[in-house]
Length: 98
Image 1 (tube, one colour):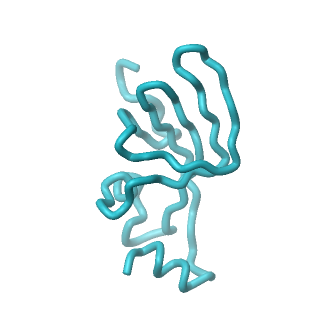
Image 2 (spheres, helix red, strand yellow; image 1 turned 90 degrees about the vertical axis):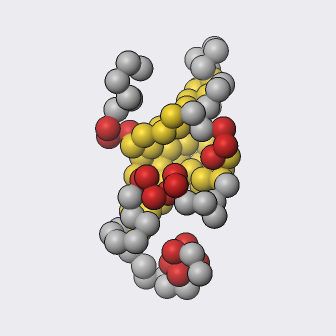
């Protein structure tokens, strides 16, 4: 049973939202991902490295088209992990050289 299944079975399970930025070939996506408050699977890198997830659920998302700079907002979207080129917690800032 995955941690998300365990959390669904425990509605009082403590969770936190972490703002993150994802760059694909055509878009820059900034939004919130939900993680366990502490312990197993609580790091941002754990979310990215989970082999059982092909998509990431993102809330309060801002999507910027790289070519035009056009920005759209979405309450919820799913992002295919296969399309992610760079990902980082928003608090960390972009990688060096960006």
